[in-house]
Amino acid sequence: MSNYHIKHLEEYYQVYRKSVRNPEVFWEEIAEEHFMWRKKWNKILSWDFSKPEVKWFEGAQLNITENCIDRHLYTRGDKTAILFEPNNPSEGAQHITYKELHDRVCRFSNVLKAQGIRKGDRVCIYLPMIPELAVSVLACARIGAIHSVVFAGFSANALATRINDSDCKMVITSDGSYRGTKTIDLKGIVDDALDNCSCVETVLVAKRIHSEVNMKEDRDQWLQPLLDSASPKCTPEIMDAEDSLFILYTSGSTGQPKGMVHSTAGYMIYSAYTFKNVFQYKEDDVYWCTADIGWITGHSYIVYGPLANGATTVMFEGVPSYPDFGRFWDIVEKHKITQFYTAPTAIRALAKEGVEHLEKYDLSSLKVLGTVGEPINEEAWHWYDDNVGKKKAPIVDTWWQTETGGIMITPIPFATPTKPTYATLPFPGIQPALMDENGNEIKGNQVDGRLCIKFPWPSMARTIWGNHQRYKDTYFSAFENMYFTGDGALRDEVGYYRITGRVDDVIIVSGHNLGTAPIEDAINEHPAVAESAIVGFPHEIKGNALYGYITLKDTGEGRNQDNVRKEINQIITEQIGPIAKLDTIQFTNGLPKTRSGKIMRRILRKIAHKDASNLGDISTLLNPEVVQDIMDNAL
Ligand code: PRX
Image (tube, rainbow, N blue to C red; front, side, top):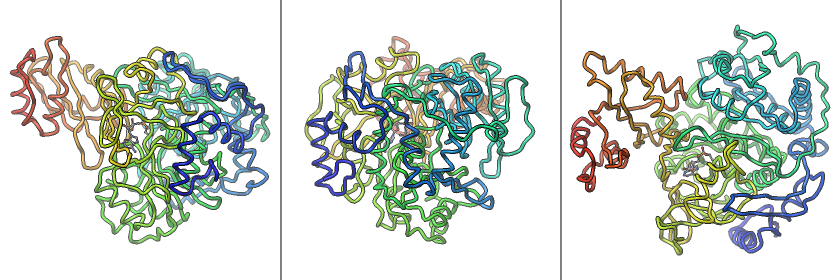
C-alpha cells in the first residue's frame, strides 16, 4: 500500500486512519519519500492552537522551486510544464518545457536580485494569466522573496491597500491585459495605486498588449530586456521549512483584507500530495484548472501542486465566452485535457448557453472533473456529470479555503463514491468537527453545525501578515482548541460532508469571497448615503448576488435615484472592483436595528430571499415600523 497514491476506498480508509492515529509518522513518510531536501527536519510538528502557533518540519531546509523544477530536469526536461493557451486562439498555444521553465525562472530570479530584492522582501505581482505570472511567482520563491499576487481584476484602491499592508518593495505588472474582446489598462491601474504607496521602489512591466503606457523614470522598467541580458542560472536560496513562501489576501467579514501567510515546506507537501490524489494525476495527463493564479486555487493547483508532481499544467488567459461559449471545450479537445477543474459559477453560466456548444467537441479525454469555491447546486452537478463527463468522469467537489492552502474535504476519484452537492470525506490528515453554538462538538451522523478542524495540517496559514491577534480572533477564538472555518456543514448518514455556506458576513459571489463591511464602507462614501447594509440573495449563475439596502440623507427628492444607483456601483468598482457591484439597490427610510443599534441582517436577508413570511419576533427592534416599509418596497 502506498500512502502517497490512494487508489481504492479501502485504501483511503486505511490511509486516513493512519493519518489520524499517528499524524507525525504519516506526514514524515510522505515528506521523506517524495520531496527533495537540503537538510532534514529535527522535529515533525509542534503546535498550540491557543497561541496559535503551528510548525511543521522544523529544522528542515529546502527550496520549493528545486522540487517544482530542478528535480524534474533529468527525467522530464523536455516535457511540457506549462501549456499556455492565450485569450485569442489564433495566437496559438505555447508549450513551456521544464528545461525552458528552469531557464526563465532563473533569469527572472537574477533580475529580481539585480533590482535589489532579497530574501524576505515582499513583491507584489499584478499580472494577467500569462506565463510571466507563473514565472515571477517561482522566481520569488527561488530567491526567498515573499510573493503577494493580487488578482488583476482588483481596482487601484484595492491594489494599493494590499501593497501597503505588506510593504511591498516591487510591483510586477504588464502594460495591459486581454479579456475576450476587451483590453484592460493594468499599468494605468498600477500607476494610480502607486500614487498612494511609498514603499514601492521598482515596477517591472511585461509587454502583453503593446499599448502606450507611461513609464516613470527611476521606477518603471521594461521586463524583457532585463530578462534577455540575465544569466539563465540561479542557485536557489536555501529556505527554512517555516520561512514564509507567500502572502495572499482574502476578504474578511470586517475591516481590511487579511494577508494570509503560507509557509514553505508544509504548503509544498500538502499541495503536492492533494494534487496527486484528488486529480489522480498520471505521467502523461494534461491537467487544466481554469482559476486565476490571483486566487489560492491557482497558487496551489495551477502552479505549486502540479509542478511539484512534474505535471503538465494549463494556464488559460481568456474567458469562457470568447470567441464563443464553446471555448472551454475547444481547449479540452485541442489539448486532450484529462483533468478539468473549475467553479460552479462557470458551470452554471455554460449550462445556460445550452449543450450545443459542447456537442461540437470531443471530450473523451476527460477522466476527472473538479469544482471549487462555493457549494455546487444539484442541477449544475448533474449538468456537469451528464454533458461534460458523460457520466464516466467522477466529479470531485473540493472544499477548502485560502487559509487552508490545500483541498480539505473531497472525494478521491475512482475510490470515493460521489454524491451530488457533497464534498464527501476528509482528505488524509484532516480532522473535521461539527460544533454547536455552545461550543460543543456534535458527534454522530445526520447532524449539522459549524465546521471546524481539530488538528493541524501542513499547509494551514501560519498567521495574518502584521496582525497575529486578528488571526487568533478570527480562526481560533470561536471554539476552544479548534480552527474555525466560517462555514456551516452537515454530515449525512455515512459520514459525508456537505458544505452549506458561510455562517458569517462573507458572501460568495461567482466564487469570490466578499466581506460586507468593506462594500458598505465604499457605499457610505457617496455623499448622499446615510447608511447601508448588504446581504446576499440567490442568483441563478453567480450563486449569490448582492442586495443593498441604502438610506439616503434626504429622501432622494431632487435626486435621480437611478443616477445614485450608478454612482454607488461606480464607487464600489473603484474601491474594490467590479466583482463587488450590487445587483439590487433598494432605497429605504431606515434599517432595522436592535436596541443596541446593530443592524438586523437576518431580517434583511429574509426579505432579499423573498422569504419574509416568517420574520420571527420583530417587536424588540428599535424601529419595527421600517420593516413593513422595506417589505412593501422590496425589489
Ligand atoms: O465557503 C467556502 C467556499 O469558499 C470559501 C473559501 O473561499 P476562498 O478562500 O476564496 O477559497 C476558494 C477556493 C479554495 C469557503 O469557506 N467553498 C470553497 N469550496 C467549496 C466551498 N463551499 C462549498 N463547497 C465547496 N466545494
